[in-house]
Image (cartoon, rainbow, N blue to C red; front, side, top):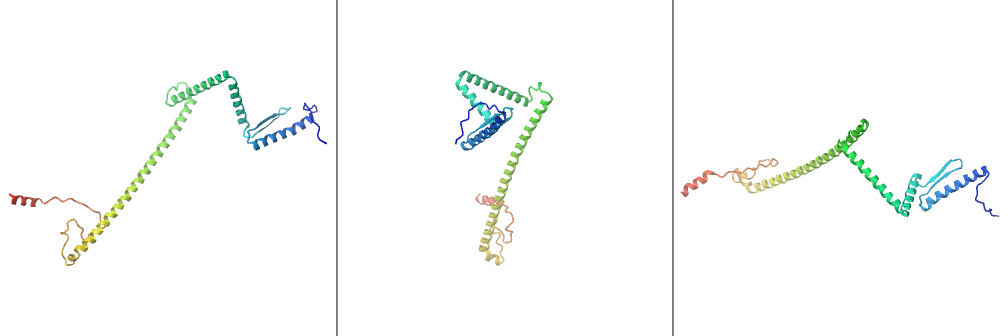
Length: 233
């Protein structure tokens, strides 16, 4: 035998009314939760009992749901009423002008202007803001300088490595020249003949190959030119 149809009207018995309220309230909140999970909907439920006790449920945040509801309701109202839309945009423009005025006033105060209307507490807050901003600027400047110093050190190390490689190549060339010199003049050196005068720009056998290379320009012999000039005369 099925249940009879319940007449929807106020229950006179307070006890039955309270029991029905508890059961249906739990079922309503349960259905709202299931609807939010199953359908990915944003749901908000607010219930006040006859004794002014609050029961609520929200899928995300009840404040967010209410703000969204008010915003959507206002948009629908503006679309339905052009006069309200004009008033809305006028109000938005007034708010933007006020924000711009506040920003300009704060900027002038940051620059040390128009401080006559500020009290000691306001000046203290302004000073704290300036110190925080100055601290941030200094930290950023120090970071940039540190990065530049590190970059210069890196480039200096690379140049030093290149110099070391070039020095090794010069020494290698000197070793090769020394070996060639020994091969060409080795027999004469063995007979005790001094061959260093034969190659004025060459290396001596006993010279340290690891010593730095010193290059020097030689002036032409003036006496030979004078003798030739005398002969020609």
